[in-house]
Each structure stands twice: as structure tokens, then as C-alpha cells.
Image 1 (spheres, rainbow, N blue to C red):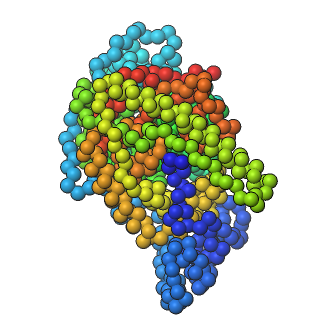
Image 2: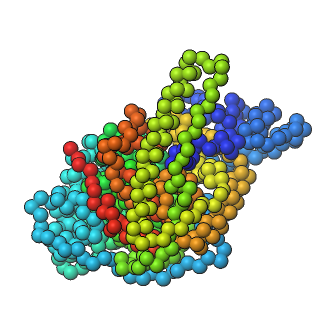
Image 3: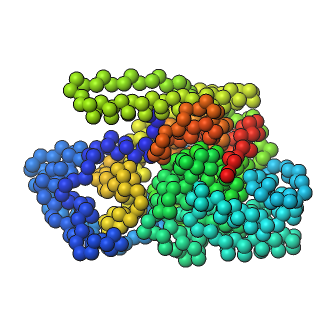
Length: 627
């Protein structure tokens, strides 16, 4: 199965992890499992760890895959017990989530120059605007570019537009569950100020007066910032995130803090599950769940989401929105929840590619606080000649996959095991059928691009074990939420399965520091080889799932994800249970997507090409019919 989204979590076993944790205590890890004193989950008291013994070390060495003799273990014990004391001293600092490590990830290989010039944005020609509609909800699904013209020409006030979107948020939230907190008072104050400024001739630009939603991992002063997680419902911060400040400066109007899966995983949060507006029986995917769902359902003009490994791509695909995952280091993450300091990226979810470019122009660039930011220019030009770009496509990703032969059952198979095996075979066959059905849309995208006189060059991803590098993410995430694990407060998180954060954080405690560094060295090879690939082409076309999703998140490359049609009535029916792991399950009447990849900090050229595809297809104009 292609490695994407939550599938990457299962590769931890490839790094040498056992299926369960040690039955003792090494480096205080197992202490979290036992409690003393109050059994209240809000105040768990982990017991003091016992000294590390030879038996514990022997078991830990087996997990790490390190051969040790009895003499070597005996020599190590004193040092390990002393080393553990230093862990206690660091933990006692209770380092907050917003403190980054003293190491900075740079996706650029040596010798690669970056254009630092910030040219003025050149947006498309103003669309023709009709008179003010009698029903403002007729504007709900318009693009940022169209809405901005209504506001600029004063045919619609920001106040009226904000009231309309607030009303839609309130109406559809009970069905779609995409709002954590409405910021109504703040929004109306901003909208009235926008109207006063525009009336006085002070027009700030195409986002002025437009309502937007912020994924609830962005701090907003005066409102909770919950990270979607149980135990954090009342959390708040004294300052706005940099992205929020920049959108304030652009005159945009914040109407809602939108949902995310708990601590940025999936679409399940402490208030329920965010839904797909095309099929509310299914989740919206995640973790930018509410951002995608609210944009796709016409309840905000645009939204901000984040991606570490698929959190813009997946909900954009499931909900039929347009998403831009910028180059790593383009958008400051100051004031955003940290999950992985070397992989987290903030980006816009909108209805059209140019909308994404307009939003990115407002939020990108160093802020002097996020030290991973790159001083690179983003120069959006709607008139850029995209035909000058060299375009490749991932040939293997578009190829038909041969069905796997089911394994021959053992002669001793019991009836219970036989039924489980047959059920698993049926599930695999159904998943293959869905992927094969969706492949026709991928192929149609290639055919459309060729019809646009684009010479598509077949290319391949560098052949590297990307999945085996992905434990870097969970190791950093475990560090970001170390206190949650060690205090036992991870029990407050809603989801507690083997693939959810509480278990993954505990498993990651057994990821050796040496292997973390080795994986980062392998990541350097990926960066070098991916740079060589983008010497051959400027844009790569790819299905939205698969190995590219892991590879490009590790290397920091930008992606634009656009709608690519609607599944027909002949589409395979969706499974009864949506486990959140497969974006191809939508079934009849649900959207599919295609993804365009670009070179590092070539986001403007990438957007220009993706916009040309949208103009040639018009899929971004389709929207769900809400009840």
C-alpha cells in the first residue's frame, strides 16, 4: 500500500521497535503506566522509577537492535543510571511547546541560490461584478479574487459579508462540526473597521474585509487555543500567532477557530469528528479538518491550515478544496502548536489556486522569531507564462498496479482465523477497486495536460527509504509533548488506539538518538537527490497520495492540491466504517484531487501552473449541495 498520512505510523516497526512497550522501566518510560495517589486523569501521579537493571537493559537492547554481551551490559549500567538523572533535571524545566530545539532544519543543499527579491504581487484582472445580490449567500462559494472585488467596489460591505459567513458557520456546524470557537465579537469589530477604512479610501488589498478561519493550533489572544485535544480545552495565550497578525494587517476578518484532530492528527477532536460536506457520513480527513470543511462548504472565504505529513493535502482532497503547502521555511510558525520542528508548515486552504497565492503573499517571510524561516521571495504574477515551465510526472505513481495474490492459508488455520482472513481479503480487494477507479481521474489529468500542449516528461522519485525516515516526526512530536506522556495526562486525549498519539509518543521514547541522527543523514541524501530531480523539471504532476507525500514533506518541497473531478454513480461504494486512513473511500458524488509539486521556494511558479490547470478544467467551481 502506498505510504501516506497515518500509514507512515506503522513503519516504526521497521526502525526496530517491538509491538509493545517494555514490561519494566527504562529511562522512566514505564512509570507512566502505574499511578499512585489520586487516580483522577487530571492529576495522575507517576511512581518513581526503579533503577535500571541488567534485565531491563537486555530487553531494551533487543528493541533497539543493538547486540550487547553480558560484560558490556554490566559496564553500562552505572552510566545509564547516572544518565537518567540528567533526564530528570531537563524534565523539571517543564519546557513549553513553543521552545524550539537549538538545531535548525534547512531543506536547501549547499550551493543552491534563492531569489530573495520581494516583488509586488500582480493579481489577475478584476472580474466583472454584477449588482449586489438580493441574497448574499449567492456569494458564499465565490473565490477570494471575486469576493475582494465586491468589497473593493463597495457593492458588498465587509460587515454584511461577515454576518453572512457567521450565519452559515452557525447553520452548518451542527452537521459538519468544523468550528471549535466562533470569534464573532472580534470579527464584527474588524469588519466594521474594514468598512470605515474602505469608505475613506484606505484599501489594504484583496484580503481586506474578507472573513477567514484559523486552524485551532494558531494562538489568538482573548480566545481559547485548544489544539483540538482533550485536556487543552481552556488553554489560551497572551499574543496572536504571526500569521494571525499578518492577516490582521491585510485587513482580513477572523470569524472562527476551526477544528483539527487532537494534536494535529486526523479529524477527531475533543468535540467530535469533523465531517466531509460532500458526504457528512464520512470524516473530512485531517488534521486541517475544519479549515478544509468550512472552505468547501462555503462558510469562510479562506482558511489557514498546517501540514506535517498530509494535513493540508488529505482534507483538501477529501473535501474538494484547493490547498497550498508552501516550501518549508516560507511561513513563520510563531504562535502555532509545534508538532515537528523540522517538518511543520503553515499554508492556505481556499477555493482556487490564485486565492492561495494571494493569502501566501500576505503571510510569508521571516518574522525574526521562527529561526527556520528562509529569506526567500514570493512574487505572484497572474500573467506569468506557465508554458515556459518544464513539467514531469511520476510515471510509476500513475501506472496500474497488479493485484496481489492472496497468501495461501496454512493447513492448520482455524475457522475464526479463516473468517478474519477472508474479511481482510475482501477489504483489500475493495481498497484496490477504489484506487483503480480513481486512477482514471489521474490519467484524465495527464490527458488534459497533454491537450494543453504540455510535454510531460516521465520522472521518478529518488529510490530511498522515506518511510523509514518518518519516525523523525514522531520522535520530535514525542519531545514536543514529553510532559503529556510523563505526567499521564495523555489519558485525556480522545483517541487511544495503537496508531494514536498517546501510544506513538511512548513508542518514540525508544527511538535511539543515534538512529534519529542517522535518519537525518539519510534525509540529507533525499534533499540532495530531490534537488537533482528538480534540476530536470520545474513542476511534477502526481497523484495526491503515495510515497511522494512522505518524501516531499521530509525534503520541504511545496505542493498545490486541486480538485480533479467528482466520482460518478458507478464509483465503488464506500466502506461502512471510515477509519480516516484512505482518502479514496468517498464513493459516488465525492471529489478527487491531483497534486503539483515544485522546486524549493518556487511556489509562485508552481501556483501559476496549477492555476492554468484549474482554468482549463473548472473543477474548483463545483461545490457540495448542503441540506
